[in-house]
Length: 327
Image (cartoon, rainbow, N blue to C red; front, side):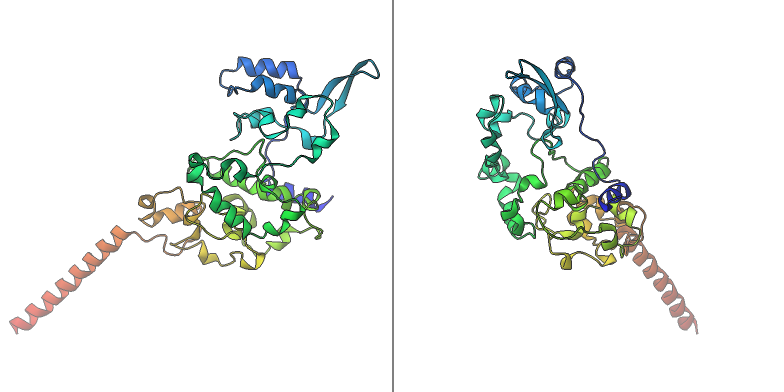
């Protein structure tokens, strides 16, 4: 068995749900219409022209040369999960907002495969509505990233953020594990899938588990922190840092995370307020009861201890004073 498959099994981090396929267009169309909880796209009917084929693993069309209906298998890379699309950030879009109008004609022209893809700044750059996400700063970080050197080979935003399924969620204490899994899957989609990895580099397949064998309790780390916690340059202004550092700069010292001033506070746990952290105990909780230097310290207990110590010294000093005074 190839190492790629073993990584996927051992990590348990590759996507927890596979592409929903095999349902028929008519059944799915009726289900979406009847389910009031499903997002109603203003372009639902327009998009169904595409999903009729690209929303399942097989499609049917009329072959005029043969004079009959033909069923064919859809290429897996061209399948878009309806549910994930209508739950994604781009769910209110029409397919032809990003793809050529010529795709509305079937069969598609082979020339369309060469169409240029948009990048994030084409839509999100210079727009006040998206200013809070700092897309320009993200682009600057990306250009300082090790990924940028692969741009001529075809590395784009979409290599990490699938435009059909990408979903940005605010991290909370309740969804943190899901957020870690989701973000790590983005990295492992290439770094644990050699077929995709080869599209961007001629390097040999990397044994990820062996590369991280120095890491104590590997499985706990993989489930509790994201790859980017150790492999990016921390940036307090961005929700997620996009400057992927060379492997030589990866975090390898335990105390960089397992300390009262854990770097995780500026990345994974940035969503937690300072008020929740200030007592010191919080670090011990977020690191799953792992040992954290200074995590058991509490500023109120520190003050109380100093007051108590001062009172003890005062009592001892008073006792000595009165003993001497009596003599």
